[in-house]
Image 1: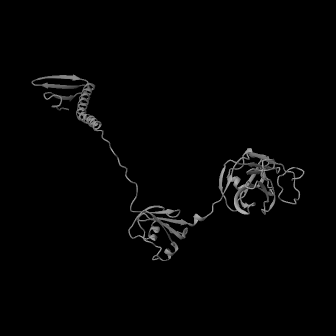
Image 2 (image 1 turned 180 degrees about the vertical axis):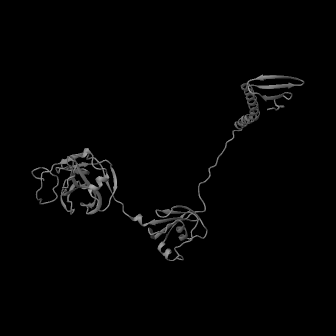
Image 3 (image 1 turned 90 degrees about the horizontal axis):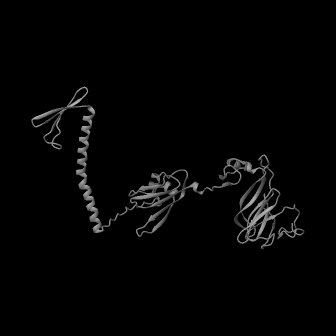
Length: 355
């Protein structure tokens, strides 16, 4: 290998490098004088590396020094002038767009096409199917004065006649809401709480049994042994006002045996806490006929101030809680049954007079 290291390090130094089996020799010539130096491979390698690094560092220093000086001078100048930089945000408001909303088809924003009609957009958004609610489609339109108009169209008429007046010409920023027949389905659930493996809400279907929902909840745990299953239900009939008014009442209590077997013995009665009228109503579970009621307003035993919750135990005893300033729990002992001359028994005391 031979070459010259030129003007950068020394304009007058020529270096010739040759290879032998074990050593590298270098002949240095400077003017008319020359000498030969022999040394191992590693030394010439280090020598070459040192030359390259030195030259690289010098080049980088020459390049970066003016940049650093310039940045420092710029910062000092900015500080002396007290400049303020203002960065504006870009508006995210879309243009040239119409929107489709609803639970059918592909909802989202679509390109506004001049001259496009409603049916064309609904076809693009795949909103026409056997589950589309055909009676009504709604359009919210932005007016020139920035107010909004609500337009109702008959989709069924448009499908039968594309030239129908309801197949309106779309405008920029129109919002089209399409309904599905599924939107009108009632969804009911059964809530399972207490000593089960998976507490939660489960979809209700006609024909569902207590065993079905307990299995979906993972079954009873060992803590439920010797206890009971209490089924409460939202009742709609307000006895006192003879009006429909949602309220929760216990409709069935079922014993749990020592082997976690649920008893099939049915409870005959429903107990409804009536906080507005300070009473507890007793209904026949099958017919919902009012059989009896007890209680009245007051703070003495057997009276109520804001009756709120009610439960029963496996012996037929009744427990009530009172809200607002009542702040207490009362227990009513089961003493058996006998015919009543008046189903309004008032406060269940004294014991020899009230049953």
